[in-house]
Structures are given as C-alpha cells and as structure tokens.
Amino acid sequence: MTGVDQSEEMLAVANSLQASLDPQSSLPTFYRGDIRSVKLGTTFDVVISLFHAMSYQTTNDDLSAAFATARAHLKPGGIFIFDCWYGPAVLSERPAVRVKRLEDELITITRVAEPTMIANENLVEVNYQIVVQNKSSGDITELRESHHMRYMFRPEVEHFISESGMSIVEASKWLTGREPGFDTWSVCFLVLA
Image: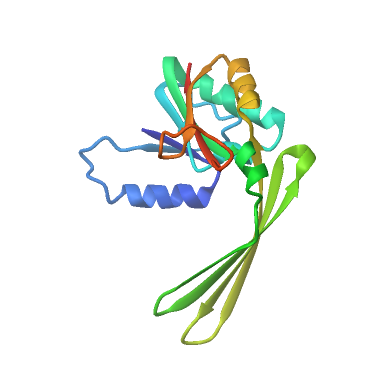
C-alpha cells in the first residue's frame, strides 16, 4: 500500500501512526506529491482517490492531469476509484450556510461554512470560520480557510476518463450503490484502465 499527499503535516501524522503498527505486517509507504503530477515509478492494481480530492481539481487541465496520473499508475486492467461532488445535486440542493458545534469538557468548537457558487466555472467556494474556545481560560482561537470545489456531471467525467485511456464501469451514490440523481451530492466512480 502506498499513500500520496501534498501536506507535510499529514504525512508526518501518517508516519507517526505507522509506528504503532505491527512491524511484521506489510507497512504502507508514504510520498509527498501532487495527484496531477506525481511519478512513483511503479504501477498498482488499484488507485483510490476519495474524500472529494478530484473536486479540488478546479480546472480542466487539473482534471486531465489527475486522471492521466491515475492511469499512469495502474496496471493493465487496473481499477481507479474516486468520488466527487455531483453537479445535478449541487444545482438542485444548492449549498447553504452550515453551522456545526462540538464540545467536550475542555473546549467548544464552532464551524461556520459559507458557500458562494461560481456558476460559469462549476465551482463552489466554501469559506470556513472555525472558532475554538478554551472553557477554563475563555481564550478564543479563530481559524479561516477557503476551499474551491468543482462539481461535475457524468458526461464531463466520461470525457476526461476516456481522454486518459480508461472507461467508467459504474457510478453510484456514495456507500449505497444507488444510481446518482438530483439528491446525490457525492458520487463514487469505478473506472477500468
């Protein structure tokens, strides 16, 4: 098993967790890289890209490069599995402001997600504000970040997959196997090299 991530911080977490695994088992290997351009010099039976990593590929060039990279790392007949935000649902059930609150005995966390749709680019810009309050001291830490997410439609996915020399075997609602529809924000594609 091989993992690829752009984030040095996430790779450090993965490597530290790996230290707790049985050293006699087959341990994963982690590399820093970009799914649009990483070259590992080997091929795999399966390439997996989940948690909407493909929706972070916001331009056509980004998508073409990411799919070509997946194909380059697959053995003949290999399987590529990925998920993405699904356009029909994004347009039917428009993104809305969402607030989540969590707390334990030490802290309270409030996360506000404020989306803005960019129609002519098939993008949603989601601006996050995260407020963490220490219950004993009252100290507040605030974090802000912005995520640009591309929503996709099956015909464009078919185009990019075909362009990279692969074909779609199945597209279904995440974790249900149900056919995607106007209420399916997350679609999982199973692709054959």
